[in-house]
Image (cartoon, rainbow, N blue to C red; front, top):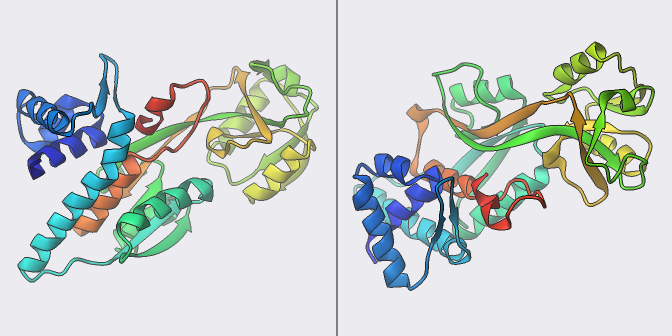
Length: 299
């Protein structure tokens, strides 16, 4: 097994496409494909599910991924130390405040297992605050929506989240595949004032003549979720807040989604930052029962 094979493997994981992976690795696609095939032959397993529409890791590929990342990271760290440039052991991560911390914490726990000596520091904020922190060098990378200052920061997509109707399992609408906007008129509503979809939702309701009864206006997600779970009102929220006690339903006439990804300042990049981005791109961010489970990592 050679290091170039691992780099090819990680490039495919990160880009989810053999052509883009070849560009990133600065080789031709046939060369990259041959390297991946040789690696699979040596391991005796297939690492990827290949189709015309998508590339996904197999179960064996998922098991192999943390080892491959660790090997490449340690190799790069050794090079840095050999030339007298000790690698930074502190990683400052910005998190958009609309992201459920449960998703981020599982990613960080996974990262810590492979990098136990790296000190993590987290900062929470909205889009503008996180961009300012990146530009000021106060964080290394942020998990957020695409930058508003296009071109000044690098960005890589992780997943897209849909804005849907959230109701308790006991709610009369629970179990339906979809509902109309008119069905929400005069219904009890928990209003999340800080949500990045709030303006779009409010305008859509107004155009449709929907006037729900507002039970509570809050900028605290846990309060909103608790009220919804208790059946005290519905809420419009991104489906990355999936919960066993909440049903998410599509609303006809309301099509709102938000993309989340990694943002960083290339001028302040580092090997530990790149290693973290590899972890984040292969993390399972949203689990939807209707999607094939083996494709979850690639959303």
